[in-house]
Picture 1 (cartoon, rainbow, N blue to C red):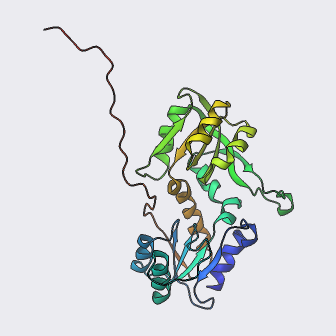
Picture 2 (picture 1 turned 90 degrees about the horizontal axis):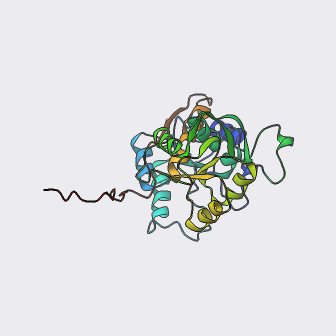
Picture 3 (picture 1 turned 120 degrees about the horizontal axis):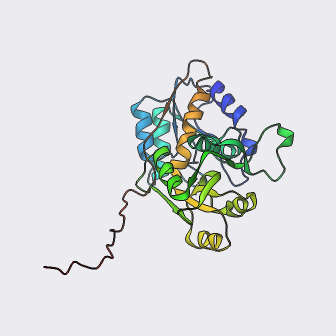
Length: 281
């Protein structure tokens, strides 16, 4: 496990995580052997069952299992049961969250790659800047699309290049607006609406956009908005994570494609035919 953890912390130093975040090794003996790793976005009963089924020795997850303080991990709760399952099966758990969000390359680089964005730069840099690190750390990425698209076309394109979910992809703004520069941020992104406006991009793609912030943003002539499922905007990073872990000797890495987005049903409103009824005959 030592080699795997060292590789993870070389690319995603825990010190880069937000103060409120909980990253690093959660479960597992540091000296235990790791031959197979499963990369997941969420540690939920379904991905834990998948890890056990494929014989994984370790799960590397994006979202923390234990983000807030707990006084018990008794198996009377969902998280407690997960902890007990993993310990009984000898499966380690490691989390790379906001430290992977700001890394370069990181979560948003993988998302930007789905759209072929070029000339990447951070949407929002860390408060202390990143020049001292010699990289392009920061939340989100801004880049140029391979060719201009209308907002409607880009929304359809997003639905085609991102993992499919019941949530789908929706957009806010003029459908005919031309988009040349696109900002992307994996995961919840409405706290970066101001950064997208300040950057002068044509559109901003993220997830978990709320009604009032989005409405006020558009009323202030901010960039068009594209909202996809949270899981779908972070799943692309798992492929980069798996490639990184393959650099550790003797480690096989697998990627979970289980859709762990909580929204499972989507119903579109029927198209209303506003034509006058045919009264002839």
